[in-house]
Length: 420
Image 1 (cartoon, rainbow, N blue to C red):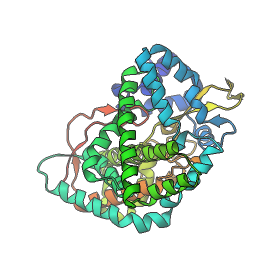
Image 2 (cartoon, rainbow, N blue to C red):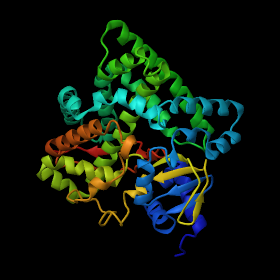
Image 3 (spheres, rainbow, N blue to C red):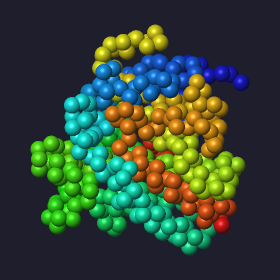
Image 4 (cartoon, rainbow, N blue to C red):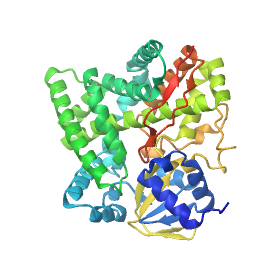
């Protein structure tokens, strides 16, 4: 068999960045080879980092070496715009305007200013008092629903419904609105970090238009009735005090609807698939559902709900002989870092008993550590423990899994046979 050449590797990485469904079916051999052979490399308009140490430094940086906000004007995005039609360029720009008001795309001093406003509702104490019982109730309802269905169950539906319902509880969104919100969030997820597809930019632009209109109605309704929830109340109070503006309020709610749903959904769906594919690991959870927190931590490492993130270099520097110019796009591949053998023993093996899972980078680091990490963990622990208790005989079907997304790699369907 002929081994792939370096150019073949670069093309395979480009296919993953572009969200090719065939490449997404098993991206880990490509990510592993990239990390092992070219851990710092230039591919197209971007410098790609894939070692754990480099990705960790990227995620933990607080605008010294890397910028999130300046990504909006990166060469990668500028070249993408040039290839689009006038309508496509306008849609592309509107999508970027929405996303670069969001917390995950802010640099200091804006980032700490906005983050201080939204942190209290996500503290461990607030989540335990406000959300833990609601999550358990939602999970119990999901288990009853699964038990009442004949034949195979599409677990992807379960994995997207639970986070949406929890977000509904958190933000005061009526259950009847959740399917619409999911359709918008899915089209936005399909477009994330897009520099290849005009069609996906147009779809995301339409989704954002609908989502922002919905958010305006949601805020107006809650403000008018005085029924604001913890997060919405914190944002509106900060806005009235001049700490944040109206666009930042809208952007924060859009981010919560998107990030609090799509990434958690990936963890739940692909995590369940991985456990059922590795029967010995599933059996460990079935034997002891209290093991669920450790299981979730290992799945965060093994699955990596968001495979890569994008930044811009804030200054010129050399790394491993590669010159990174100020303004260069820098992409960190979290999925490669999470399987770095320099950090994780037997990294390609799912092992829910391992002691090094906690060193994963799936939730970010430092000032950009995932705001909803506690909520996502709480949902995943509750769901996996309940599945192990209620359906220890669960099995995957023989149906081929079709993959979508790009950074947010996700199965379109995940049929399982839920058996006691």
